[in-house]
Length: 230
Image 1: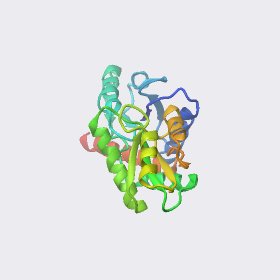
Image 2 (image 1 turned 60 degrees about the vertical axis):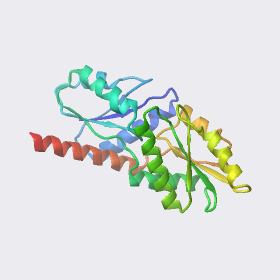
Image 3 (image 1 turned 180 degrees about the horizontal axis):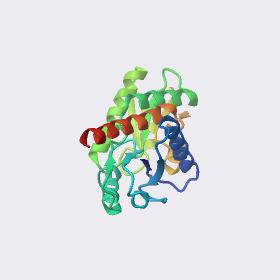
Image 4 (image 1 turned 90 degrees about the vertical axis):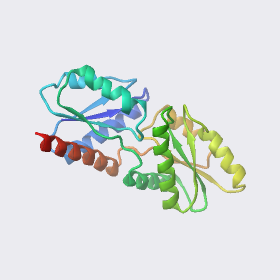
């Protein structure tokens, strides 16, 4: 069983993306049950899903772009609380190369042109290790685009996305500014990104086939570890 764990949002468009990702995973792993759980805001929780399926081996895949509090503390605690003895937690998505490719695709779809200043907009975290992932992603994006990429955060960390956009305008007078969305699904954070004053605001990564492929890769790696240990 694959348990795909998202953060959760009250915006109904968010769960639609997660369900679309789950459908893609089901198509890529026929015969493997795929269930959706949420670390916060929405139900069912990871604990609820695992407690209801204690008889199945479970690979828990956090659909998070960086390994912050939810991935390092909250989700493991929910797994323990479920009483499930055969649950394996994979890594979060992190700055995977295929996701950087999706970032670029979304930017171009939003109207990005070579020569635009670029801000990478991320959710933000109080965990410095999660912020390191964001910096790694910004660096990789800059290498691919051939231009330096600034970082802005929708919450918790600074600078904010709006501050990063304004600073880049000061640095590059007359140039357009494009914001790349290092978010998985629509919601409050994406609205902050859209309202940051940039000329181009890309959509979130969404249920892109490359995101589905990354989830499947995380699952197969964990399933192989389980088979080896058996």
